[in-house]
Structures are given as C-alpha cells and as structure tokens.
View (spheres, rainbow, N blue to C red):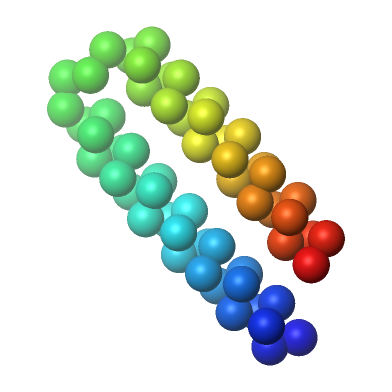
Amino acid sequence: MLIINRFFSLFVLDWYRTELWINLLLSYPVPKYVGRKMKQLLRVSVLEKNFVYTIL
C-alpha cells in the first residue's frame, strides 16, 4: 500500500509540474494549435500512467 501511495504521489507531482510547465509555455504567444496538441499529448500520457498505476 505504501509503495502504491508513493507511486501515486510521484505521479501526481509529475503531472502537476508538467501541467504548470505547459501552462507557463502557453502564457507566451504560442500558436493555439500547438498548445492544444501539447495538452492532448499530456492527457494521453496521463491516462497511460494512470492505467499503469491501476495495474500495479
């Protein structure tokens, strides 16, 4: 249980950092299309990670 909690907290922190970084990036005049694509990619990677953690 402790291991899963540790994995989960790592995953959440990782996701939070990435989200912050992308939001920071999007606050600069980046084309909206690129921003949308990056957010889609992030969502997919988050879903994949979530799936892996549920298996663990």
